[in-house]
Image (cartoon, rainbow, N blue to C red; front, side, top):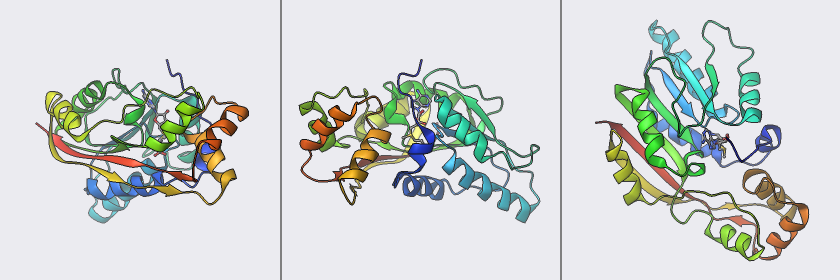
Length: 249
Ligand SMILES: C[S@@+](CC[C@H](N)C(=O)[O-])C[C@H]1O[C@@H](n2cnc3c(N)ncnc32)[C@H](O)[C@@H]1O
C-alpha cells in the first residue's frame, strides 16, 4: 500500500531541482542504441521521456531497433500524468507504464540494460530489496544510475518539522557506506557512490510553503505548515543527494 498520495499536476508546477538531477542521471547512463531502460519511481515521466527520446534518436541514427522503456511508480496520480505525457507517441514504440511497489516484484517482462531512478529510493526503507529487484530485472551487463536523498538530506527541514510536530514520511537518507554494502549484497558492483550538497533557495515564503507542502509534507494542514515555517530561518531546502553508479556483479 502507498501511504503517500501525490498531486502530480501540482508537483510538476514546482521549481524542481529534480529536472537537473534527472539530466545528470541520464548523462551518466551514456545510453547506447538499442538499449532498454527502466525508470524506477518515474513520477510524471519527465526523465523517462528524455531518455526515451535519446534512445529514439540513437535508433534512428544507427538503424538499430530501440529497446523497451518501462516506467514504474506506486502512485496513481503520477502514473496518470506519465501516461498522458506519452499519449502522443506511436503505440508501437511507446513505453510500458506500470504500477509497482519498487520493494516488491517488479512487473517487467524483459531484463533492461539500464535501470535509472531520480529522487525516489529514499522513499523506500529497504534499499536492499530495491537493489535486488533492479538486479533481477537487469541484464547480466546492466547498469544502475540513481539519484536520491542521502545522509544529511534536508536536515534543517526535518529539524523544523520535528519542532512543529509535523507528521513526517519515513525517509531513508542512506550513507555511502551502507549503500555500497547494500549494492554488493544485492548483485551490484559499485562504480561510484557519493554524496553532494545541493541546496535549493526559494525566492519567498509562498513558494517555500507551496514547495514543502507538495514535495515533502503531503498530508500537513495549513496550520501545521504555518507552524513549520515559523521554525525555518530561511527559505532554503538543504538537499544532499546520494548518487549511485553501479554495474552487475
Ligand atoms: C519525489 S518523486 C520523484 C519522481 C520523479 N522521478 C522525479 O524526479 O520527478 C518520488 C516518486 O517515488 C515514488 N515512490 C515512492 N515510493 C515508492 C515505492 N515504494 N514504489 C514505487 N514508487 C515509489 C512516488 O510515487 C513518486 O512518484
